[in-house]
Length: 74
Image (cartoon, rainbow, N blue to C red; front, side, top):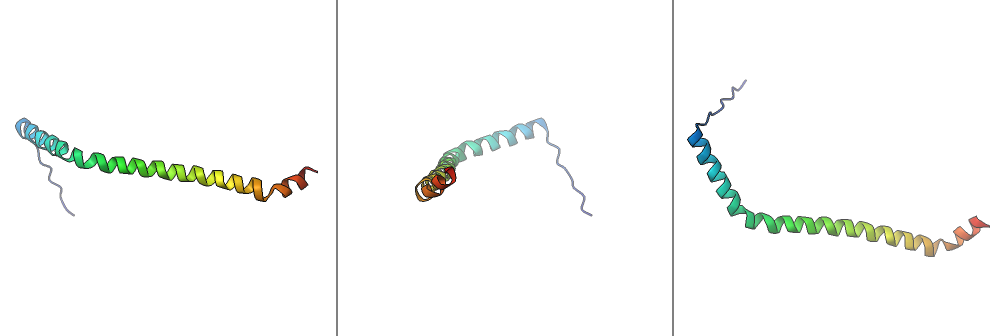
């Protein structure tokens, strides 16, 4: 069984760690934002394709199976 030893930070160490982490995050934002934008564009395209697929399905049903609907109404 492994024992987990946790490191205890002093206030100065914690401030230094936080400052370094924040600086690295600011440096990575220009890389992150375009990738996130591509992700959102992909989600939008996926949603749009699902909607177009449903519209095409309904159009095919209304055109191809028009006679079936008329026969059922009579």
